[in-house]
Length: 283
Ligand SMILES: [Zn+2]
Image 1 (cartoon, rainbow, N blue to C red):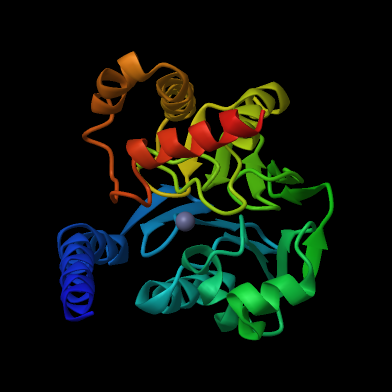
Image 2: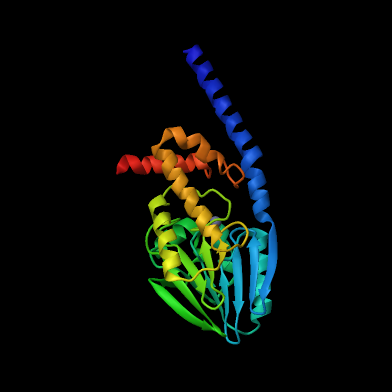
């Protein structure tokens, strides 16, 4: 009995040490880096605020201001100040690409304004997962087109499991710019746990360029880029799927992404390969 207890004690110690190491080496620096923001004055009516949670955009016109994703913590408050200064007396329309706190926590700064998110979430789900104070006021079932100055803005609910159950992407037609939320990341491994569906991502990578002429991409996380951001992320998924079915190629394929932002076991090429393996088992 004593021996068993001793071993249980050792195992617990090892697990705690491993968890702490993982947190100190990977999670904490990642969270720290996530707090940094940078602002790009893209043109007269479009400001991009990257980091501080998910990447955000502020689009202004004579009659409306649209905010895409509201960030979290200090960055959320900073963003809301910027938005309110730009908006003055104009109404504000907030769009959430999905319910995760790094994209929606700042909703609470937009009391009395319209907040739109994907229509496949229910109110109960949102309150449980993201809290009542961030609850949207409108649910987007399919798509919505909004005239904004000389541009048209399309909000599209992907309406199937991709990153979550109801990811919304935003496309600015004249600027040929896609705000992809976490459906597309730039040089960052995705979290493929829970409801996230690798097949949903791969379907979205085919659907989006067919629906929209995409020349600029604002990913959920990472720098803004061109269509190559989508091509790289699609390649990542193809490679991880290949690695899941062919063990001899795994090491080489995983090594291709060693420079990407990642956290072992959670968001990493290895974790993505495991997610694809699980998927293959169920097929
Ligand atoms: Zn995110």
